[in-house]
Length: 182
Ligand SMILES: [Zn+2]
Image (cartoon, rainbow, N blue to C red; front, side, top):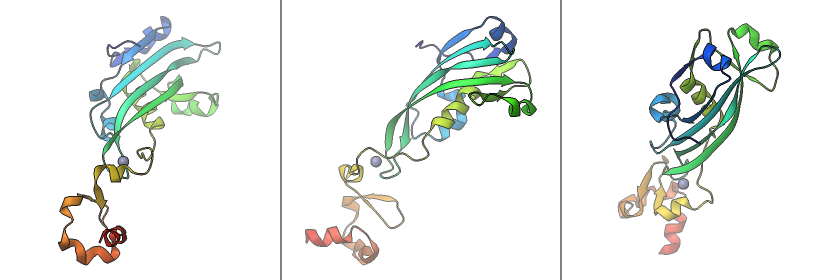
């Protein structure tokens, strides 16, 4: 895929008339809402969009997206890299009332003027394929980092949990391990 950014906006009249194909990257700066769900700004979002009109004169946007992003592991709270991929099959609708009659294979994209916001379109698709929770594969990512989890779920390094923590050990699930070491 191309490494240059896709335009932020396209003229919908033009792209459907030309049966345009647009491919390239979408910079994270244009994806503010999606960016909030990421752990870091290390991201690569590639998209390919084809604009066509079918026999029913429906304006279709098809294609796909591939993204590599870093999200927070819900177990160790460290960043982890995930890949997102999805097909795009949208029908451009001028009115929400038209959604009801839409082919079930198509998702609606409502746009009431000729200025088509490609970044929003891609962002919506990204949000849809983003997993709700993410965990490092395997279950020992905490061990690897040498972290212990406190009652509140916040992480502290092993060296910070000295004898002063002993009083809390009763309710700490890791207290058993500590006893075994002694
Ligand atoms: Zn993890």
